Image 1 (cartoon, one colour):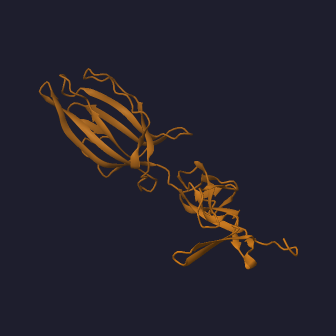
Image 2: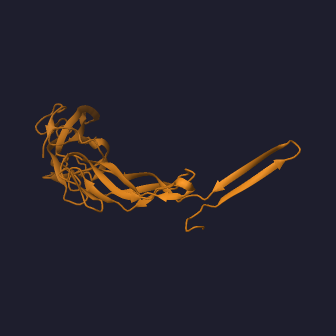
Length: 277
């Protein structure tokens, strides 16, 4: 240091080739500190009202030669552009409030160095603003019958035993598909004995149904009894919520017999109709 001012040390190297009559020289200066390169907010929110997720900010820096480093967590503050759709705390705990889309913004300060006049490193803080989409979905509400077919499954005592295959789509209160993975199950009420001699069926446990679509297969089974043997059951399709009681989506009065399978009073196809709780 001279005259009370910082000076940057410059190193210089020179190479000479006397045989070929050429020379080269190289110079390097002190490198400034690491600077902001990129940043983003993750993971974003796409869920139902009442569910939560923790947002976080990630920052990536680069050295003075422009080489980026691995991302790391930045200390950011968060806010929502529409708290009535998605509400976020200052620390990024985000909760879905009502169906719709908005953004959650993270704000933080990052380091920024550059070579200024007289080859001196200068520091300027960079104010970083990054957004993540927050999409609060409409709640699963009822069911749409996508397809409904009845076929001969087998014969018993000279009579056909039928099989009915119904595919459902979970929809919201407006009848729009809820096309994300959902945990769906069944609850049985008023189940009578299986008069074909087979054991009474049991409800399906909760399981993930991709795109909110699932299929229910009804049949009395292959037995020598044939005819009108079978069983009756009140079947309730439910949305299995992890932190709350199951939500009913559709109630089905199923009369499953070898010679006829009736659902909510219909032995013909229900395709295109809605099933309500």
